Length: 390
Image (cartoon, rainbow, N blue to C red; front, side):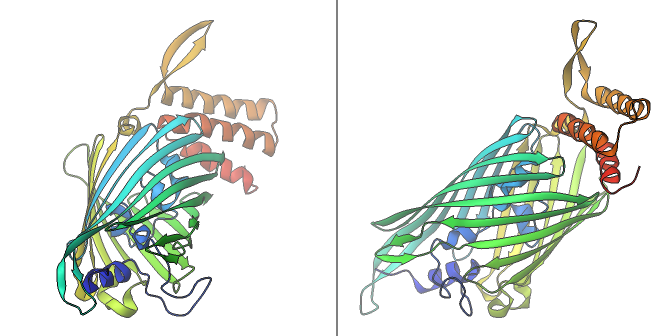
């Protein structure tokens, strides 16, 4: 029993696993190569440089700390029309538990289609199938006003005809708002047990990614990643996202592009490029990405996202407050503005020191951020205090 040569080549090359040199493992020995196929069209269009830019349900794959960007509930579905008739599908959801934590779950499935069977003489003798699947369970939490972390537990299974195997892995990630507009991120992926399929053992594709995301302008985001795979050469990733002025009220159009160096040496310079776009209106968002793989052809990703917290970004959720012993419903934005005014007066009248002011501002950000309120003023003031300003 053996895989069709072209399908095997596609699976290994396109997942960036044919490696040069050795590190923790011998080159090219990693199993479960499908774990290298990224989820979501947005990330693919941006050259996979989203370790620090992760802020929605796709963070379940790229950086679980990014799930803290979910305000209420999000669902994501991606169809990846890959190479040589292979398709990769993924689905995920994330829901906020409270003001500081989010949980999520997802499933990824690779179907290689029909694979030609050949006997020991190389003669065709029918077809068989192969598939790979991963179940993901994530938890993310805000640790401090500018620091968040998350972890994803994976159950991995592979099957080739009658042979099957299972493995377990853990991802961990963190995000840090270094200063206004600049976020740093890191993620360790696929730390876990090896997998043995058809009596052939192999480790999982363990890797460490670090990155930065810089909001250059209100409508322009620039990102970069360094991918340090333990069984691959180091690769660089760069991406950009431009929010295009929309002519239709309520419709957000986004243009994206990216560069990644991981496949250039064996698939050509064109394989480094990626392009895509996104459209979002209300709770519905659609993203598309196109990525070339040299002579192997083009891949196309189409993602559908349902953000049930989208409405809160335009009009904040009402919250219950107590006034004169009676509970009333108030706009979160109004309460936030009143709270910031109260803070300013309190800081002066009670002569609060820098630490006391920082503690109060951190609580304000944690309280109102999950409601979709724009807390950038509180964050900026918190940064100034921590940097020694006023």
